[in-house]
Image (cartoon, rainbow, N blue to C red; front, side, top):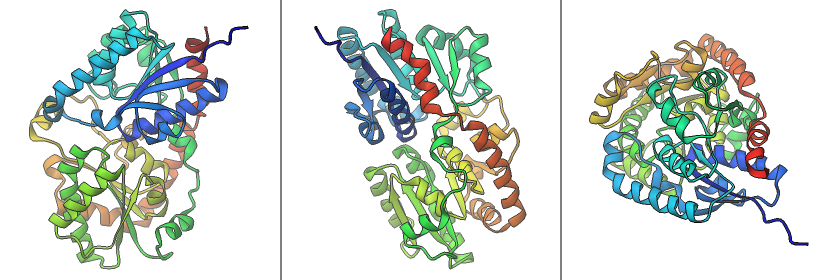
Length: 384
């Protein structure tokens, strides 16, 4: 009897958050299909699930119009080359994980050649650029979305969709072990601690980290006992962060740098200063008072600032449908403004209690068993 070949799955994830999401999905799929073979572009979390990374995901980790334009030739070459490989040796299914501008173009091409495609993490069409729905419909056979309000948008556009919840809500405990996390860092039980999360992309660090470091210096002047924990997405990010700390002359601060361990940082911290993005949701699931900030290239900001539909950009505020935590964007994200906002989040007990209650409600809403739900939605594409 000739053995049935293991189904092949191709995937692309373009940054640290996508790597974590893809790893959760792979884990769920391999529970049902232990012989599943997966390859493509990804990171270390996917590698831990047996993923064969043909290229490192850092190739895709750029953001903003100005930054993408600078890397566009390389990105287009990579997408074209990988697309050729997939067309010549078709996988059973291709899954693009986030990175919509890169993945949708590839997915549309693959779909034209009869390769089934899925996309994990719907882009923020509820926030801006809703005209992308027709492009998505031409590219994607099935969309997996993380937030409950997204499914209706895709259903109305005629795109098969499944709401799967958020894997972070499954992975993060409802009541994190604060003292255990502090012991891991080597921190005394009552030492005040601020988690500082300036982004996972090198381009984000370039624009955001200097303001964060200057704010940390101001906070140290006002609260000398305050210490800082800074989780970094990888070695290159750590090196860039350390260089920026030296440039900012912040060597006298007590900074605990952790690589690939944001959960320990958030479990241990009293509050968080965080760049807008997936990390804001992580912070909310750890019931953290926080200040959300973002800075980008001026051209990128000029092109994007009037395209949004919502009054907020941070995921905790979007999901709670109100300004639960402050947002300081571009020129408003001055070191003084950041430090002042952080002090309030650190020291107002009534605000802390209110946020913890609302973020607990959010956590329970997003806790859906994402890996199982997502794998159940995609298994028919892999086994029929």
